[in-house]
Length: 236
Image 1 (cartoon, helix red, strand yellow):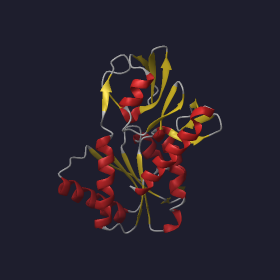
Image 2: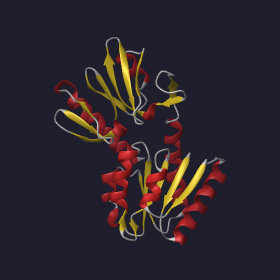
Image 3: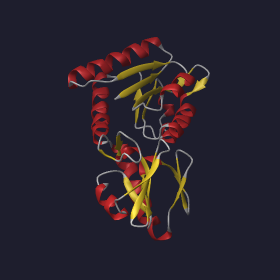
Image 4: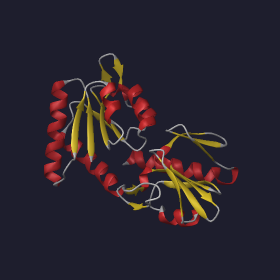
């Protein structure tokens, strides 16, 4: 796991870094990298392969929510934890699908509880498959934006822009991904809930700017499943 801390308060950075180190030692986890950023331009340079971002809302003359909205277009799978000394930004955190909101000063017990939930989700997201026609390494399920039927095969589109044809049918993918946050929006399309920005009447708008169709036949069940997914995310 790669972690970014975006904050401009040295004391808060030190405290959060200390909590992370304590948590990793307690759970016997190895974090690949913890990087400190003070400004948005530093975050944008490092965000592409980041798994978890601790984002302070108030960064001098920058707004953390605005930064978070830009980040989601660059890395839709990243988990964002809002950190702030004020509760006023709690609702604003929903704009960037923040998975947690930690009030400063961050309490150790609360931090450990929230990190347990985040790490459980992270390890679940390490599931995937190999398809060398798309990319040489492992393709994680969470990297898939959507899957389209292509004759008796399917075309997979990844968040990094790569795509390719694989032998599995759409019905086979639905079975493979039944424990993952995916659902069918159209007779020929399966979508990753985590990639969704907004849902329109006929189209689903993804964080990377692409759109996929949602048909009248599937729309009601798709919306309900998406709402259930969001509620589960909030509960966790």
